Length: 364
Image 1 (cartoon, rainbow, N blue to C red):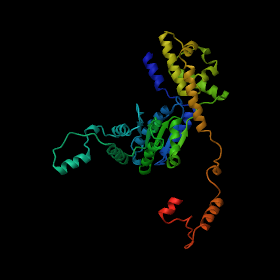
Image 2 (image 1 turned 120 degrees about the horizontal axis):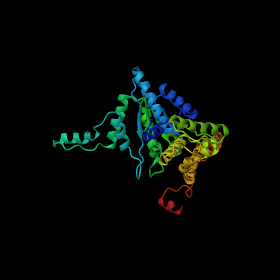
Image 3 (image 1 turned 180 degrees about the horizontal axis):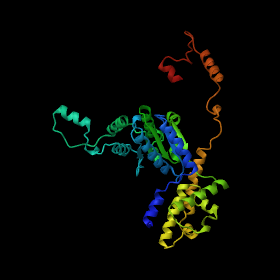
Image 4 (image 1 turned 90 degrees about the vertical axis):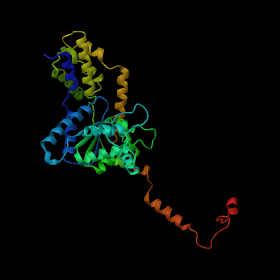
């Protein structure tokens, strides 16, 4: 019989292979394994929808795929967290250090600043202690490692952190760095983030063209989706061998509402309820345990706003109205012809209209 700790750990590691999850998994795997090198995919979804779990499954499958096909010349996939700064702007130092460490550069703090070392040798100075590598040197090391090892994919979680900058113009600049990686490398980059990550695409046309957003949807407010969603949560409890009262899932709308159709959020809720069950020394999970541990209305409202913003971003089904941005070509040509007709000919200077001296400039 499993201990309480083992049961809770099992819930934490539980991955439910539901319809949305399976569809995206197969789509992304096909894109990566088929060798569409240099592409940038952005997996976007609200919190609790299961983006990180999906990335973990993809990494496991791709690792096995690479190990089984050494003839392809790829290394195992790389996973990096785009760490959010405590204050200020996103910096690349921690990104490169994290990536290089996972790529097999564990002694980064012992590497010399090569520019300083050359200068010391040229001047005949004694060698100083090790100096911290500059960001541009870390970038060179990172790109060289990507070239040498060729990981089949690089997964970057919390991609929205890259948009944290004081300058409005530079909000898409960090994403452009990833674009430059894809221009020169043979590795697909997969970015994971909420809707704020997708908004980075709007700041630069090249990035908007190159990055392919992939939405990860939650289950809708239709009876078919509600029934399916509740079944998923029942299956999750069965997978960890937790007994629950038969009436627990009778009110399907209650269960759906307090998880917002997000599978990850639903499983997290069940974990809290199981902890409460252990705390009260109960043998079965009850409606009371679920009610005690559900998210508050304020928490649900914050998540609902995030989901509404997500829907707005991915519900643009209207055709682009080009007339709002550009005039007709014939009008532009006519305007150009009119301007050309106004050009002055030699000897036709009008003093008041076409001054040549500072006095006339002052008069004008």
